[in-house]
Amino acid sequence: MRRLSIVILIYIFIFVPELWSHSTDDLEKHHLRGDFNTPCFYFQTVDVTGDPHFANGSYLHDGVMIPHNLIGVYNYEYKDAVTAKRVAPHLRGCICKLKPCVNFCCPYGAMHNGSHCVNTSQDFNWPRQVNMTFRNGSEKTVDIFHQFAVVPFRPCELMFALDPRLYEDDAWTLYENGTLFVESTNAYLSRQDFCMLTTFETNDTSGPSYLNPANCETQTTNGTVKIINAYAMLFSIPFMVLTIVVYLAIPELRNQHGKSLVCYLLGLIVGYSLLSIGTLNAHLDVTSIECKVIGYTSYYFFMAAFFWLNVISFDLWHNFRGTRGINRSLEKKRFIMYSMYSWGIPVVFLVVTWYMQEETNISPELQPGIGVQHCWINMNTWAGFIYFFTPIMFIIVANIIMFVMTALKIHKVQREMARIMAREDSTRNLKKEKDKFGLFLRLFLVMGVTWSLEIISYFVGPDSSWAKIFYAADICNAVQGFLIFMLFVMKRKVKQLITNRYCKSPGTPKSNSTNSTNSLSSVATQQSKVFTMPMTTPNPLKF
Image (cartoon, rainbow, N blue to C red; front, side, top):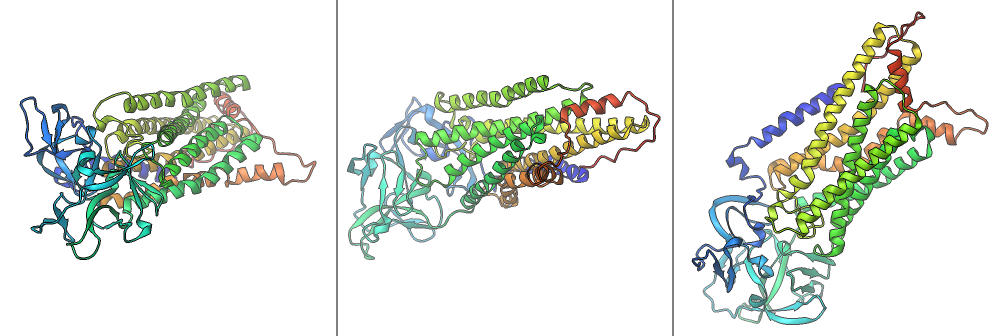
């Protein structure tokens, strides 16, 4: 196990910089994130090159005056909803900040011929009217160019039109904020998921024409992986619940580490549950209060889970460096301090995240994006790195340092005990603590390595050929509940404790147990004593 952990750490610290060291040409194949100085998301902009501009720096686009502070230079563009490419720097205006936007699959007056948009010389009566629903439920037929800012953008290559005049199941509702509701799937689609196009009542283009939406014909690979991850997280939850039940039911497991593990699992359960709901609930409006509650709450509990993992690492290190036992009163006070740290600091992160999203007008690249396009932090911008992966990286590095220091301490104690010919009972206590350390080291590897790969996957992006390498890591990350159950419940000692408590006949004496923190005192105390009775050499350190 030690060799495996070394290999994994080498992989993280060598392979990650290798990914980041790609040339600019290689980055063209990767997901691109906007510059911090851009005034808004790319999908909120239109190309204003060639539009009338004025001395004050503003531009006029389709009757909308875009002020200079909403004009930015972009050196990339999206050819679909996820794939970006480098282009020559050009000016774009944040028109969607001034007026609700809707995408057109082709520029108005052009038609899609199967591969790209082409201008037509035929004199069509291009439709402009569309039925729109207000938030109060009232409907009105409006001129789409008066009600919305029209942006030429096709989310994906393969799309199909929704035409309720031909098929009743294609019924749809367009809301005043640009959101589309599709009745057949009971799903709300954001502006990035559909585009409007001209459809004809018959195959003869000379007949009546209408504006109808079109959405992607097939689920994208990235979207499919998200759905699989959501179901994998739901699969994990029962195993985490079972682990909590076992650790609460068995007195021998209700020690400092056991309680910390339970709190860690509680954070994961809530985070996994809410994130799965936000992903699988297709009819959830991403701009609704419910969506924001899901996003902020899941963010808090995920952060709390990581801080509890940090507590576990710290407590192992602290116990092995201690020289005195810990009584129950002191252990209780320590757990209260741990709780204040692990449940309290994530509140600070939550408040900062909420404030940056709801109360500031900074660049959207720096805003979390919760309740804008998704119920979770926007991973297509730098928000994912700033608000989520940065604190996780610091925690992972801190855990690595403490685990290494703990391993060195175990090795030192083992050598001293071998030199002074320690007694068999002290050797047994050391072995017990080594087993515990190895168990939580495996937990750290499960969490630390998979989340490290998640960070790499974030920088690689969903549209890169590298992304497929990390799909397996995504799934492993989602099924952590099952892995934790196998590590902490299905091990022989825990199964023996369950058998002793519930399966033995009345009157059968239960095995004695020693509190984990008190056993450390015995280990440390024996370092200063020399015994003259026959000795046993401690077992080699194994994880």
